[in-house]
Amino acid sequence: MGETKTVDLEIVRGDTLKISLEFVKELEDGTTVPDDISNTVISFTVKPDYVTKDEDAPINKDFVASMYEVSSGVVVLIVDTSNLEAKTYLYDVQAVKYSPDGVPIEIRTLLIGKLKVKPDVTKRISQIL
Image 1 (cartoon, rainbow, N blue to C red):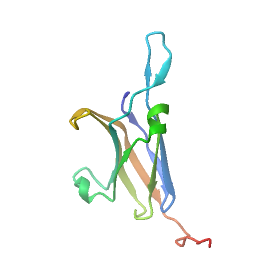
Image 2: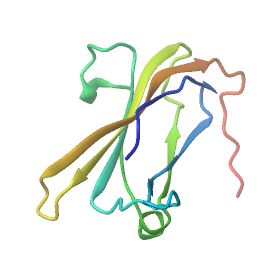
Image 3: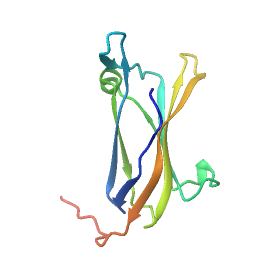
Image 4: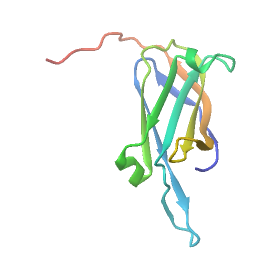
């Protein structure tokens, strides 16, 4: 599943955060192909600090790859940020690969860093009928 990357993110509060992850493996000849991400749960967690429990985190979301994502090796995490305050948080993205009988066999932190949430001006969302 690759090395852990440190990436700091910045977003305006209320905007949709999209994180694209590519799961590939390198073959002996140096080419890459989509990695097998079936039976994998990807978790995105945002916290104000390291001591906050996952269940108390403002964002604690799990994603399971669709059939298309499994075959392509690309997963896009889509997260609503409207419940966040404008400040800097800590985040990480973890992937947990499970055996067919539901036992975790590999846990990997893919991304880790700071998420800076800037204040927004517009608070309403227009509805189109």
